[in-house]
Image 1 (cartoon, rainbow, N blue to C red):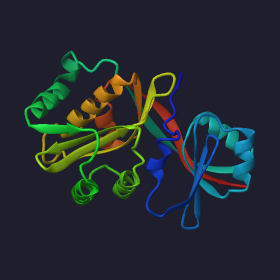
Image 2 (tube, rainbow, N blue to C red):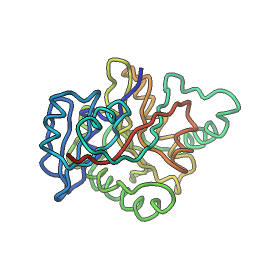
Image 3 (cartoon, helix red, strand yellow):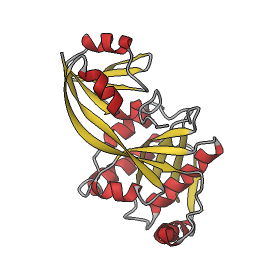
Length: 253
C-alpha cells in the first residue's frame, strides 16, 4: 500500500498567486501560470485523463508516481526528473530510545517556551509577516522558497476543513502547518509548513509534532511530507520514515 502526496486538498499548495484557469476533472488537477500549463493527478491516470491531457499538452507535471509515468510514456514524449518523498509514521509519537534523543531535547525545550497552539491564524497579516521573515532569512540554505504559494493558500482559506496548527509566541506567529484529512487507509499529506527556528531552538520539530498529534485525533497513521533533498531530507528523516520516488517533468504530444 502506498500513499499519494497529491489529492483534492493538497494540490492547491502548488498554486501561486499567478495560477489561473484551475480545473478539477475527476482525479486530475490542471492550472496555468502565464502561458505554461501544469497538472497533477490523484491515484492512477485513466483513459479519460489521457484524453484530456492530449488537448492540454505541452504541460508540466508534478508529483507523478512511477506507474503513472509509464502510462504517460504510452501517449506522450516525456521529460522527467526523479525526486524523493518522505513518508512518516505518526502512530507513536513517544520517540523512545537513543535514536530520538536529539528530537526529545528539541521538544522538551520548546514545551517550556510558552507557545500558544491555535487551529487558525488570528489574522492573515500574521502569516504574511512570518513568511516575509522566512523568505528573507531561511531560503539560502536548503529550502525552496514557496512562501508566496503558502500565503496564497491561507489567504484563500484553502485550509478550511483541513488540519492546521498555528504556533504563537506572545503576539507573533512563529510557525504554522497544515495536513490533509486522512484517506480510507489513514494516509495524509503535509500540505505546507514554516517555522522561525532561528528564533526558537527546536521549534520546527515541536510545531510538527504538535500538528501530528492533531492528526492522530482524526485517525491519521502516516503522513507524506512531500519532496525533500539535502538538509530538508535530513530534517524529515529524523522521524520514523520510509521514502518514495516521484517525478516532476513535462509532456509533449
